[in-house]
Image 1 (spheres, rainbow, N blue to C red):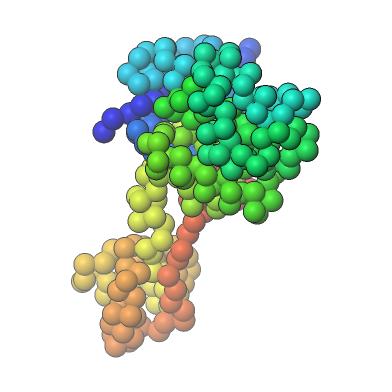
Image 2 (cartoon, one colour; image 1 turned 60 degrees about the vertical axis):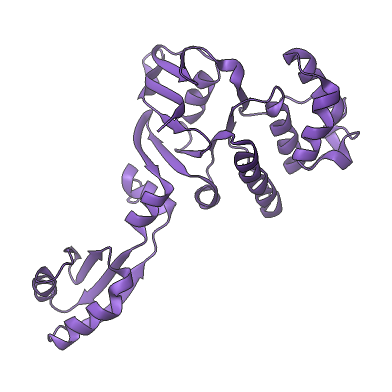
Amino acid sequence: MEYVLETEKLTKQYGAQLAADSISLHIPRGTIYGFIGRNGAGKTTCMKMICGLTHPTSGTIRILGLQNSGYDRIGSLIEDPGLYYNMTAAQNLRCRCILTGSDPKKTVMPLLETVGLANAANKNPSDYSLGMRQRLGIALALVGDPEILVLDEPINGLDPQGIVQVRDMLRSLAQERNLTIMISSHILGELEKLADVFGIIHKGRLMKEIPAAELSASTSNTLEIRTDDTAKVCSMLAETAFSASVTGADTVQIRNAADRSIEINRMLIQGGCGIIESRIIRSELEDYYLELTGGAEK
């Protein structure tokens, strides 16, 4: 698999505090990589190092195969779009074009059309909604035609309509331009709808990288049965191809069995097991994240 962005043991230390501790990321070309973690987990620190906005204490970054180089192929929106509020949206983009050596005539209006702001090109960002300002920030990040886009909390604070607009725009960018996007968000339900791969960071350490398909298979295909005799249920299931585990005083879970629930329930009832309840667990990204980081108890 081709990785357009990799880090190896990327570390950032401020005094005695390890903001990022030996982070090794692997981001495939053309994917949307969801970067997940609590406030203070190290997401923004990692993104700043990846974009060349702060220097690592140690570790390496490979961008398009280039070690500690290639930062000009990354467009970023970290923390704030950095807009000039006394200038129009088009003027903001022209300034960025001048700074990056891009042709304003070939860049400004096409990018405003891409982010859905062509009709508001001559308005100042001070007259924009928060969602419109975020889209303008993404347009600024796209100046220079980068191959990688790094976005830190681009949907934070948006209303539901703004979230949908940004989500649909990012999906289109990834598909139409084969753009690789790294995005962080606290709104895990929305990130689950968007990302192809997830990286979970906790207390400065990378806990897990997992493809969306693998996450779906591991969390949403479990049959949970409440019974008056867990030992008997496990014994009967041991004679079949199903693997069961006792997860509570009266609860048994069977992995990869949701599509066989009717068959399993019928077999257990015919075998004399008392079934109190049977349900398919549809865990989401948030549940997986909490379980992985130990946050469910907190």
